[in-house]
Image 1 (spheres, one colour):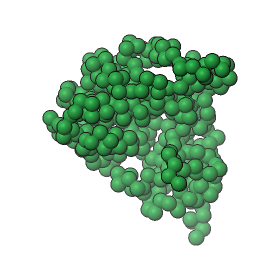
Image 2: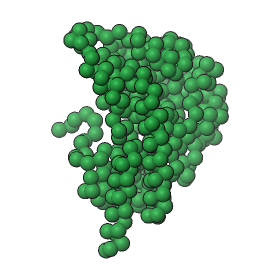
Image 3: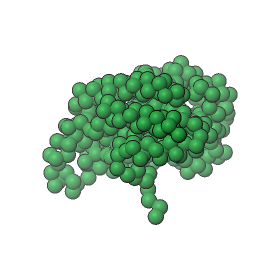
Image 4: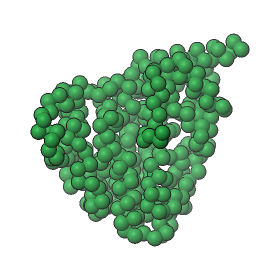
Amino acid sequence: MRIQGYPEPGPGLRLHLNENTGGCSPRVLEAIRRLSPADVSTYPSYTPLVLACAGHFQVDPDWILLTNGLDEGILMAAVAHIARARAHDAETIVPLPAFDPYPNATSAVGATAIRIPAQPDYEFQTDDVLRAISAETRMIFLNTPNNPTGQLIPIAALQRIADAAPHAVILVDEAYIEFGGTTFLPQVSRYPNVLVGRTFSKAYGLAGMRVGILIGQPVVLDPVRAVTLPFNINAVAMAATLAALEDHEFLPHYARQVAESRTRLYDACNRLGLPYWKSAANFVLVKVGDPVAPFVDALAARGVHVRDKSSDPATPGCIRITAGVLEHTTAVIDALESIAAARQGR
């Protein structure tokens, strides 16, 4: 059967999709339990959540569009600014390695993705992106921190690209920014061609609720609003997101655990001789060598599921490990050390 989403990995720790390994705030579950039959049987009002997001992100409510996960925002931005705009021979720029929805959205609207090869150390390809900008460029996808490397794009680089392509939409995907780095949001007022994407799936632990957000000036956001379905977020998800925003202690606590988990993973990789890249996100990219599948299978046999990234030419021989709750990190380190010991015993 061809079923949407990713196959279930089986029992064990889910460290393969960058989810919040500690779950969501208890306030989220309390808010869901308080929903009434009328809340479920009627179409929801989006105003409370839009206003809450505006206050949280410190922007005008008219600069906010709620989306069904940030994935929908990426696709609808492409539909609005390429397909609906009838931009013939349109191109997008996609620095590699890249989140799959960027080339997928490009293909969906009939545009051509100009892929920028990765640097050997995954340093951001600022000059290469600038050289790729042309009259046909309609969107540039910039992911900071990057998935799967965890590398940040310097604010100055984002500014240079936005300045160099005033005719294109610059989508700055900050899905993991709560775990490290500086947000581009304070710069948005200077750039009418920039959309900043955020999500409640990762740091807030609401991946199952599918709530994302696009933030930008009306000139760039309103075309996306025009093609987005009117009731794309359900009432349960909105109640959950409001409750998550009201819990001011949950996210900082989890972010601290993520930071400590990353450090512990670095230390383990150093002991085991596994190359890795320091990350500003809630995951670490680790090079285990080819073939990767037996390594991933060995971890799964020990109850730890990680993401095999070796099929991407930009990340050969690599796996991506979610860094979350400390006890889960201890379990994955134990599994890594067990595999190393087994290999030495051959």
